Length: 113
Image (cartoon, rainbow, N blue to C red):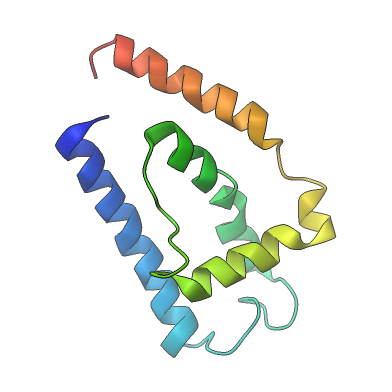
């Protein structure tokens, strides 16, 4: 994906991240370290399950998705979540994800899509 398609996809991701940011700032989860309160809960796990892909997508697509200035609360949540020992123990190695994502991207680019 390049050009206008990529720009539209980044804007869509930013829109979704803005929803999370707004909820952390003004919604039900305001002032909490995690969605579950002081510790992680089900929603933290759901959101966190895909979070490890964000830096990989940023590198492969050469875009910025999680800007700490634009999404400070989500960035803080993400940093705290990924810093938990239990989470570190199950997250896939970034280099393996990057290798996989790069291969997928090259495949689609070679297909003209």
